Image (cartoon, rainbow, N blue to C red; front, side, top):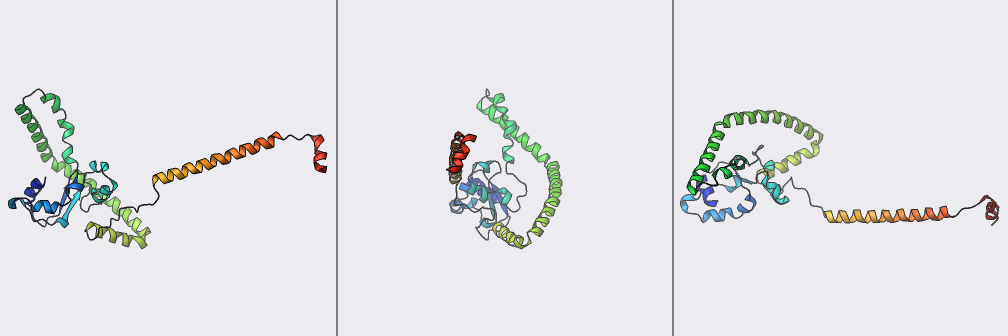
Length: 235
């Protein structure tokens, strides 16, 4: 993976902002600079890591920890738009049928057939990019107008806090701080603590109900006849 990335980025400008999407980028991005330095000189690239954003595709990120979902989220990444990073995976929905069609072929024939199918898939995607991007651009423009209006209303109603919030987001997006404004503060109370508290409240509630039932039974068991009232009043 390191060799492929470095060899590819050799052909791009060092100042070009990059968005790298990978299923396990949370682990792969660790000590990336040290690993790149160990590659052969011709494959090294002199990119600026500060303008490289590492993200996890939106479907795969659901299987990661909350820390990964906060730190490598496409929705929190400047310039990512509504990309999901899953484009490379969509080919499997169609190529799955190749299994039954090629399982009795020899190794060479099967490989050639699969490659022909994938080449055709890539070609169809390439010639369809014009219509696809036009459709997405129209949707983006409509959604931009809605979101801009909603943001203005929200910022107006939260005028005191909005400026500070914007500053926090911009500093995070430009990597001027490691403080993630989208990260919720951790509570000292865990789910187990809440469940235990609810169970204790239910236990106390059941105990009070039993006490009331026993009190009602004792009161209802004492029947006083009219002839006994004078005696009770005198006593």
